[in-house]
Length: 256
Image 1 (tube, rainbow, N blue to C red):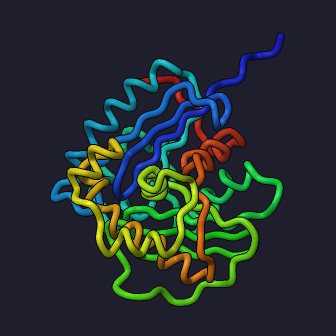
Image 2: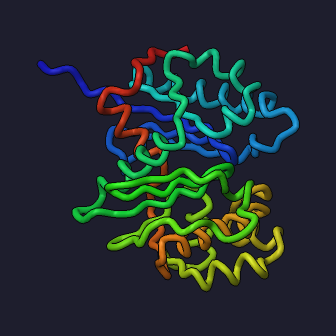
């Protein structure tokens, strides 16, 4: 008799949020959660991250044993004090370079499509843009907005898709899964007040505060790619991480 397939768990520690996903298939979660912590700018990011990871660890124990990857990137390089909080997870931690983060995000989205796609992932401290034949990690994001126009990227052809918390929140505000460069510019220039966004979108105050700069960043990337609109994906970086873990990148975790 064959052994049952282990579930795959992903913990993503980003500049704005910390999220987790446990699934047997990428679009059919057994459990998921996300909390906005603002680690990139927090006075004491380790004090914020520690309790969040403890709660996630306790929840993951329900699914153990599982194949687990704990991924972080720009925020760990910018805030090295987070290293002490990650020690408990050390065997499962994957410190992603900007290029790796871009490629992993692309894997998760490309798996949904028959035709090639260009993926934009606007994070808190960095933005990854990746096509089948090229990629770039930009040092701008919703918590680190561009000071001016971005340098030209490349002429994107075919499907262009945005993913992540910023893009998802902007799509909910627009009421449709496609965002135009003009609409993003209008939102960035004259955003609703933070309280209205929190109430309308069900996001944290931190996420609402960052949305205008996130919109400006996404619009600047569209400008750099020479495209007018972008489709917003239901997936995010966690789905690419899930695929990487399922294919062997994750470590077997048996619980606390």
